[in-house]
Amino acid sequence: MVTEADTGRLEFVDERLFSIQSRFRDAFGWDEVDDRASAVALVKAVEDVRIAAWSRAMREATLASLKGKLAAGQPTAVLGAAVEPVEVIRALAAGCSLVAADGGVGVIEELPESVAAVARQRLLLVVSDGDGGLDRLLTAAGRGVPFAVHAHGDNEQEWRTLLTAFADSASPPPLILTHQTSTTLRGADNPGGFTDGDRAACLLAALGCARADIRLLGFQSDVVGRWSGDTDGQIKLEKLKWMDEVLDILFKGR
Image (cartoon, rainbow, N blue to C red):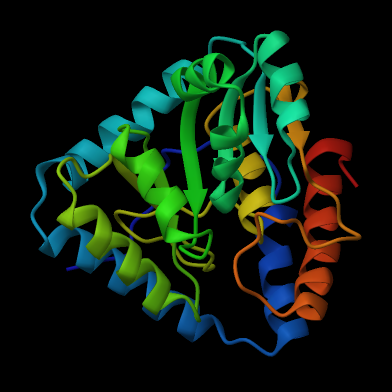
């Protein structure tokens, strides 16, 4: 059973990263009740399946492991929906670790094999709400990359499909769970943010990564990136405006 609890596992960076979630719900006509129902269902689904790597204790261990890696002061690049191979090559040359925002993980398979091997070794996490392309997400999961699976009001079918595919695989990946509600949930965390890309950046900061160490690759807000999931282009562009506002709060404090 999911109960409310103040977990205190993340370092909350700025209250506006959470208050903006109410604003974008209002802008798009969404109801927080639906966000919460999806989040509660996500935690229940993960814990009911009884995969050892998905137990609450193991999810806590995955979170702690990520915090340890990010506390080392190494630069970390977030792969957004418009990321291109050349950007990843430069980031790797600069010593960056990688975190992929959903479908952006697919760019790794376009790298020269010797470079792709390095990228796979440095990929710390995939942040996903389940619409980034199942095949490319399963490719990353099959290599044991942890996933931060996100619940919101209209993606329950997507996260259920993703979890089922993970559960049916030979080695289900480590998980952490995220949500976007104003109440706390035991077993899931709200790092702030809105889209997979800006949520990934918020999560890095909340896990203790210095904001000066976070690099954003493929975060254009005037075009729908090629790694975006199936989506209405005009609505996606509206969402990207909110992404910009989240990133301004996170990196510019405004």
